[in-house]
Length: 407
Image (cartoon, rainbow, N blue to C red; front, side, top):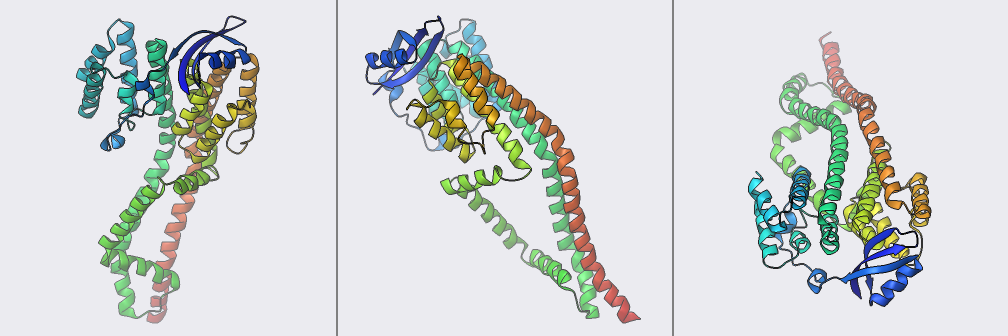
């Protein structure tokens, strides 16, 4: 099979670009004709573009902020539009960036391009920085000759991604701060304040209730074995980190997120928004539907959405419409998604429809994030009140016993 980049037109004069894995150009022309398009030009991807990119082990763990990648895409697009050669544009950005690590990466990309490597292959050597979405869109831009337009699409995609993540993080910041403060105050009381009270109970030889004994036991463990407790929690954190990298861990986390009462609404809307915008961006830049779905299966973070994209990529090659496949996943894709995609398929405006769908869900996420504090605040108050009440009752009960003994 050969990967061929093509340009085709339908009978209404609409142009379509993309890439397909076919045996030869005749098979490509037949496939396009079956979809109502006539092949106008094609270009076979070079062997260097198809071969597996060798990635250094440490390069997989390097990461750069979303903001830096956004600025890189924007600046590179402007410089290329101004007529600067790609290598010179990358060198200029490398000299301007204040992040030393990112500057080093750009210098290596510059050297790789100078040595004859393609821009996409040079980016692919840093999977922790430039994901499959970024690399594949750049590859299509290089082959089709519209790199400037692809970079603009990428910059817009990263900008929307940044806005979406900022809203989600903003909604989670308040409850996270409250929980951390509550845990910190609890540890402080159990290790420094409570031992002074429990010494009184010990001297008076009072029979302590079960709740008080539980608190005293926790206090003694934290006071006498604090380092061991810290090591246990660190070990648990490391274990969870590696567990969530496994297939079972990803599936477990995905299941919890799409079933948790308050979280699932946000998770579904965020993933639907990302799916719609990324798929629209890939189609607009000239990536084929199958390739776009494969890229999505590696880009979306939730296990169930990734699995759905893999299923879509397989079935769409058999002639099944995307809307009918999506409709088989009502738990993770609301009915609106399949209906809108069906409209796009019938009118030939899938990219535009998906873009509107992405904007709709982004607005929904924005509204939910604004209301999240008012939803979570009473729940946090109940949790804090319950913890304080349990502590107060556990400490007051022995004191009443002491007062009875004095009488």
